[in-house]
Image 1 (cartoon, rainbow, N blue to C red):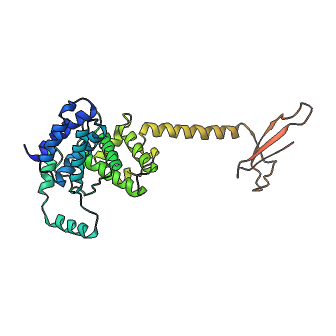
Image 2 (image 1 turned 180 degrees about the horizontal axis):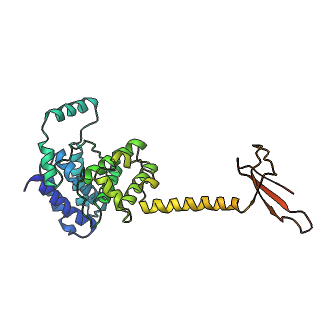
Length: 291
């Protein structure tokens, strides 16, 4: 068993412990095994074990487990490259020259399509952003449902790209940033709108576009039809109010000076007083009344 497979197996066991379905007494031993393995940035990115260990650190009540988890996270953070211009240029030159054999082998081991493009380095150590990426990943994977055929990228990579685009728009993990994340997660999990999740996974909807879509744009066709019906009903009701009046060319609009009006007469005062006439200009919408 290779290092990546072993790390993936340990991550799965730790996730069960975090969710409460695993044996919590094994957590410390599993963390110590992770500490002995030769883990690099590629393995951290592909297995996402860092998020699992961080979740264990937050939920565990055992002091020794928390200490070891913190030590691992501190060590792994050193693998993340600094965002300096020099290192960016060096990484771009190396990516052009070096073969993509590692990325292809990682994709095969995870059961992904060979056509996946090389992963973009958008790693982050921010706890809030990592948690948001995990929420998006789970929403894209779905609960008890298989991934559709022809997916363009893995759920993990799509989640990273979506979160990165949202973070770029808000420049911080503010309340607006979190609300944007929650709305994506909610709509992806909507069982009445499976087409949205499938379109994101298959690349029909690009991550950058999905990051800024409105609630109306993400809605299912059924919901869109309901909303259109509500709007039509409102328009019909408005038009009906106009039709119920009496059209006349005897009244002249003081605003547009046209003689195309509809009027209604209503008794608004006592019976011995004349009725009040309400007038609507059908040309410009101007309204007035007289007795």
